Amino acid sequence: MRSVTCMLLLGTCILVLGPAVKGVLSQCPEHCHCHGDLQHVICDNVGLKKIPQVSEATRLMNLQRNNLGSIPTGAFSTSKGLISLHMQHCQLREIESQAFKGLKKLVYLYLSNNKISSIKSGAFEDLTELTYLYLDGNQITELSKGIFSPLINLFVLQLNDNRLRELRPGTFAGTKDLRWLHLSGNELTTLHPGSLDDVENLALFHLDNNKLSTYPTAAMSKLRVVEELMLGRNPMKTIPDNAFQSFGRYMEKLHLDNMGLERFSAGAFTGVKAMTVLHLHNNKLKSLPSAMQLDTITNMTLFNNSWSCSCQLAPLRKWMDSQQDETDVICASPPSQKGIKVRDSTVFKTCETKEEQKPKTKTKAKRKDKGQKTRKGKAGRRH
Ligand SMILES: *[C@@H]1O[C@H](CO)[C@@H](O)[C@H](O)[C@H]1NC(C)=O
Ligand SMILES: *[C@@H]1O[C@H](CO)[C@@H](O)[C@H](O)[C@H]1NC(C)=O
Image (cartoon, rainbow, N blue to C red; front, side, top):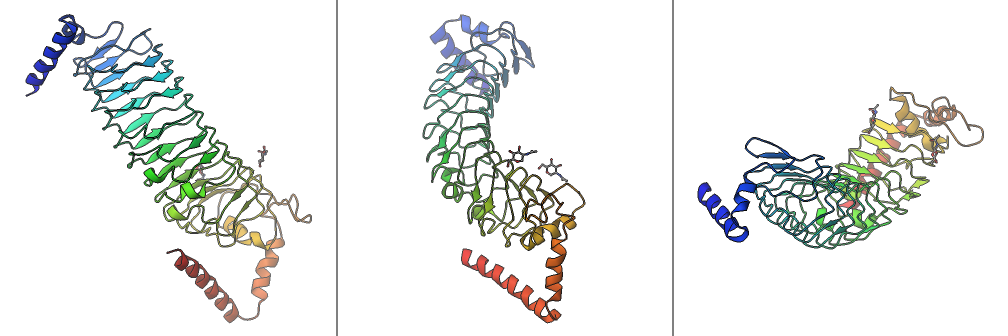
């Protein structure tokens, strides 16, 4: 079977391109190193100007650091066996329609650190096995609707450090198995409602270092299983009610640092049940919502905020007392507490005392009961 296919392929080649091609395809491309009977073709930084033609036998081609400029239509038409293609640092500006045509076995595609600003529609046609796509460090401002739609097996999409300004519905159409989406370091101001509907199985979503000034509740509400969400370095002043609700049972890591964040709505953390890591440093927070569940958290950064050391902060102080690490968390108000470490503040003693002073343990038990009911009640309403 295999030799028949080979003969057919070579036959076609000879017919179309003339007999010279057979010789070219069975040799290691000029200036490159090849291993394992041309299975690996390594052309890292060898001054190539054109994408070399290799045969179906080649599994991996490394073209890093060559000045290639663009990927024309059909550039890989003879390289049908490629599984891994490396094209980082190739000064690529454009990816033409059907640039990767024929690469039906490709699993890894590395296009990081180029100057790609334009990806023509149909660019990713035929890449049905592609699982990892790296496009970080480029100049992409826009992704056209359905651009990724051939990529039905895509698992990781790396788009950090580009110039995306918004996400529109249909951008991720077809990539229903996408699990890791990296969008850090773009210029995103808007995730339109519906823009994440096609990627409801995202587990890791990095949106830090963008320009989001409001939390994109509608778009986010379609995500169901996010385990790690990074939102730091967005100029967002508040986190609204139910922000994380649709995936709250799964969310373990949440990064909200360096945002100038001033407050959480009372129900901001509704549905969040499994959080272990929460980063809140370098913000302007005064307090945390009283309904927030802190007991699952093992790693929380709190420094450089505007903590108001009053009884509302008592649950946080209690959490701090249960932790080993002793980072400085300073009270910013009220005036009597300003500059005092939360750990050293005597305010919280008063809060505890108040509770203990409430006559009789019965009352205390009752109050606890009530608290639980309230929480259950809220959960009930959600479902
Ligand atoms: C404290 O956080 C603010 C943002 O809320 C930031 O601008 C400032 O640089 C931070 N200070 C330090 C010492 O990191
Ligand atoms: C907390 O998490 C951050 C990253 O998420 C990590 O760098 C740090 O070491 C963790 N700290 C502890 C005490 O586990």
